[in-house]
Structures are given as structure tokens and as C-alpha cells.
Image 1 (spheres, rainbow over the protein chains, first blue to last red):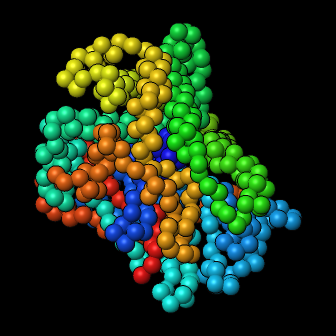
Image 2 (image 1 turned 180 degrees about the vertical axis):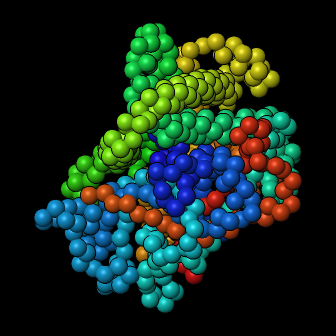
Image 3 (image 1 turned 180 degrees about the horizontal axis):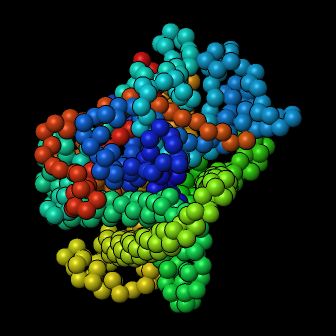
Length: 476
Length: 46
């Protein structure tokens, strides 16, 4: 579950194209249950792309799709990990056919070690690619139901109004904070605003990198890099500071979350029948997990390499064309061409310089926005744990604004380790065993039965309040 | 050996016809659109 937002909020993209610019980011994720008891993952997503917002509003996005990676695929009959490498380095072939019943036991594949990579809106209608569902009939005729077109994922939309400091439900056409006490509504609003601004800041930062890579050619990137290398050490440190701090902070918060999860779930039981085979399967899955964590960086490297290759590949063609055409015209037009080239080069140089300057200014703005977001997160986190009062928020923000990113990150780490914060994290149900049997029913695959076990704490956090309010569990 | 998977489903978007908010410059304005949507789903029975 945490993989939706850690180590970074996962992107909302189109058609599973990880190379495309995201249209939004996941703000929060939670396990939930429908009225019939079936489990599902509920996501809060910030739609940040204006064009995508229009398409959402006119309901052009009708199909959703989740992309993820599973480290294990355990056969429900044999307990064998089908994802583990067999002889010859190939995946193990299943002995039991999925959907069939063997001695009264349904054969299905239990996917474990799941990490989510992205949420997509896709153009084509829902298809049958699901691999985690099952369906059984009352008379015991059990079968796996892969078809997903009979499930409609209901959604709801909310407008965050930062002018009015309010959150409106689109469906209900009213404020969801209106009937809450200020003591409840203010932290709730601030929490949502913080999450949204964080998503925006990350989005802006990613878009900046994306645009920078596409706008600048190879040579320009090289020139730019050289000019950056010539800058003073002080400037270089300033530029790297906030990004490095943000990355380090993200890692720290991830580890804190992991520690908290271990502490809150010490008595988690392993599946019973496959106990003897589990250790081996887990050992085999460890390299796979490393593969998952390295996946994004590897892909990014590959993309960068591809971009470089494609641009390099284009250059020789341009050169060869020049070589072929220039000799023919050289004698007559040499002088005039030289003059035109000089003018053209100067013009291009000025364009490039202007573009670089604009990008630098944009970069500075983004870093400032990221710093401001960090400040707000620290203050909001302090409010959430009771260190600061809501009334003093603006003053606290002013006071924190002068602090360095490292200092703010340290504060967030400390706040995350505080008992209140740890408790608050524990209230968010996490998928600890992605596929478990629903209590009281047999042969049913679930995503997280732990969601049932997690009891709501009376001291609800702002995030919990918001999630409850958005899901209609809280009366407004 | 980890493997990728996708889970695809139909999304029922809410009715935005009565929403009187302009998001055309949402990145510069003080309005934000938040969608709550179900992702992976597990049906128990029917």
C-alpha cells in the first residue's frame, strides 16, 4: 500500500506510458471495503495537468488501469512460487490450472510482494488482464473470474479551493468541511492542501526535468553542463541542496514507516499450508525486489541512453547531407553562406541563452516552491501532533521560512518518529500480505485482510478524517 | 523473478455538468481537482 506514495507519489499517466508526462500524482492510498465486503484500494489523486482536467470533467477518461509488479506468484494448491526461476532460468510452469477445483480447493495464483508503479487512464475499454480476482458460486462451483468489465470503479471528485480554504464535493455540490468544527476542519484542510501542493511541486519538478531534456539538444546540454561546472562550489551546493535533502528525507520517512509497520504488526501470521516452502520462495524473491527498486532508475538510464543515441544517430545524417550539398554550391556561395551562418549562429546562441535563462529562472521558482511546501509540511505536521496551534500557523510558517531544507527535513524526521505520528501512520491500513483469505469465506482472494483488523482509533488524524469524509463514512 | 501486471476496469466518473469552476489555468490558480477513485478491487462473490 505504501508503494503508492513512497518513496515518491506514483504518477497518473495515460496508457501505461511511463515515458509520458504524468497528468497527476497519487496523494494518498487506503484499503477499503465495499458494502458486499469485497476489498479494494482507494486512491486520492491530484490531477495537475490542465488538459487532463478538462478530459476528466467531460468524462473522457472512462477506463482506469493499475500497473504494478509482483515478486511472487504462489499457487494456492502446491504453494509453489511460479515467479521463481526454474530450470534454465525460466519461470516455473503451473501444475494446476487456475480456476479449477482440486479436491475441493480452488486453484488460483496468489500474488505477493506487490509494488504499484502507476495509475493509468487508458483509451481502450476494460479488458481481461486482471490477475488477482476470483469468483465463486454458492453451489461450490468455483472458478476464477478474470473479466474485469463487470466491475465499475466508482469515483468521486473534490475541489480544493485555496482562496476560500475549503474543499467541495463535486457530487454533493457542497463543502465537506462546512459541518465540521474548526478544530477538525482546519487540520483536515491543511493536510489535504499539503498533500496537493506536494503533488504539484513534484509534478512541476518532474515536468521541468522532462521539458529540459526535450528542449535542449545534446550539444546544448553539454555546453550547459560545462557552464554549470564552471560555477562556484557554493552555487553548486545551493542547487543540489534541496533536491538531495528531499531525496534523503523521502528515504528516511520510508524507513521510519517500515519500522512503524513492523512495530504495529508483530503478530502477523504466515500462510499455514505453505510454511515449509515459504522461506525458499522468499529468498528467491529478494533479488527480484532489488530489481523492483532499481527498476525506475534503470529505465531512466535507458531512456537517457535512447535519447542520446537517437540524437547522435541524427547528427551524422545531417552532416552527410551537408557534405553532399555544400561542395556543389561552395564556389559560388561561400562568402554569402559564411555571412548567413554567422548571423544564424548568433541568433541561435541568443535563443539558447534566453532559453537557458528562462529555465534557470523556472528552476529557481520550483526550488522556492519546494522549500515553501517543505515549510508548510513541517508546520502542518507540528499542528497535527499538537506541537503548534492552528491559529499560529501563518506565524509559524514565517518563522520556519528562514530555515534550511536540511533543518526542515530533520524536523519532519523527528515528527515522524514521535508517538503521535507513528500512531497516525499505523491507522492507515497497509498491505502486509497482499492476498489473503477473507475471514469467514473460503477460497476467496483478497488484497488485505489486515484492513479489517485495524481498528479505528478514536483520536483520528486529519488524514483519517478526510478519508472518512470523502468516503462518506463521516456524516457531514 | 518479479513480473509486471496490470489491472484494468471501467471508471464511473461523477457528473461534472453542474460544476461551475474554471480549471483552465489550474496550475496558476488557487483551485485544485482531487479525484478519489478505486484502484485494485477484489470481489468476493455474486
